[in-house]
Length: 458
Ligand code: FAD
Image (cartoon, rainbow, N blue to C red; front, top):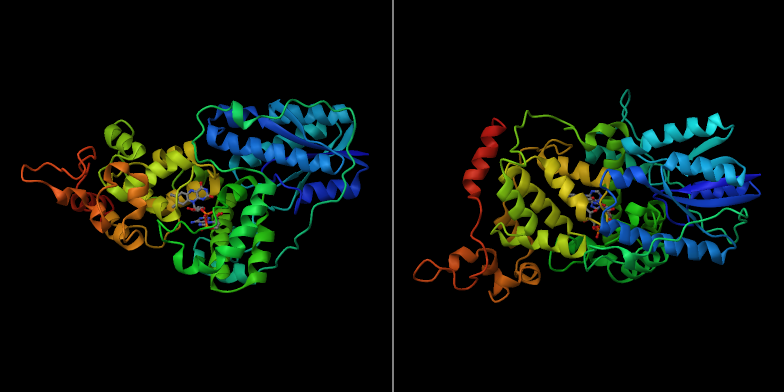
């Protein structure tokens, strides 16, 4: 018998439950990836993620070839394409990983019934997109945990799923045609700093960071200029690395750095279990405060200044320019940039979340939407009305101003922390000679905070 293994965002050979199950139960497998029309039509197949994905598929194909198989790639409607390949290979089963979004739920249901109509079976495997499966930790009578700290206490004690190596050989079904693999070189509009994708690149990065970076992580992960976080988020998004394995390997190493890193992975699981239980939270407020956010039209110029990194607040602009250049932003930068858009400019979080998804290589329904909601105070933050002051935060997390000078060249000549307040460096005629090309602040922080507090009735 033959089985199709549908890869989605588990683009790895290690810890791949669908692949393992197919190998155990069938004589031959068809490893398949579908470039899904629906994801393209919704505008989610943006250049930065397509570039990273192209690397992932090339690496997966190379690893499969080393084991006697190869990757079959098709483009089109995912349900149609899977059914077609299953028919061509005369496969009795299709294996895939469970995922957490509304779209993944719909895809699973449609695939299951289309395959059943042709006498085939869809087998959906444990949610290996997270270390602890969504739904595994739930309070009595509820379907998810709404507060991180109690979630984390239980997460730490939760059953750890075993981690499995890559299969040594894969028996591939013969005669199934494939399209050409996509190539990063042919994708236009990719940010210059988008890293290399693929399981091989991800493993190398993790091994290097575990050796040299993990121990300092607890103390320095918030240091904007130090840039010492793992940068594994794109690999976790595409599943080139397994969160189960990362937790196990970090715990093996031990120490406060490893513990802090594992805690961040638990945050990732936390947001995934919220979205799994409330798929609509990708679009709709998780908790509503009756916010009457300013719309895209009302705040057009300010939104544009935010996107371009020209708000006149250096730390915000540095973060937004890092996003455009690398397709990635430091977590502290994300917190500040998102807080600035929502609580300072009082713009709808969905507008910012969409812009992040347009550029982030790690752009992810669970992590992006739920973090935006958290920052906007419509999500799971237990202090939804807190406002992070960008100046106070800049002085704390970029004390020497190096992060700003790295990303905002107009300010590169200003030394030290003075770079965070270039408006204080005016000459006798009110002109800022230290940074003539840098904009004036587009908003007054105190007045903006007041507007937000009033809007929230505080
Ligand atoms: P590290 O600090 O090395 O952390 C290790 C891993 O833990 C990360 O790779 C990530 O998978 C996970 N993690 C860390 N922090 C968080 C967090 N706050 N929430 C969930 N998981 C976390 N992360 C994404 O992966 N995709 C997104 O689209 C995304 N959008 C965000 C939007 C906003 C407004 C905010 C505030 C945060 C967002 N994050 C997102 C979370 C976080 O900023 C990134 O995961 C992190 O910066 C990635 O860098 P790293 O891999 O070096 O992280």
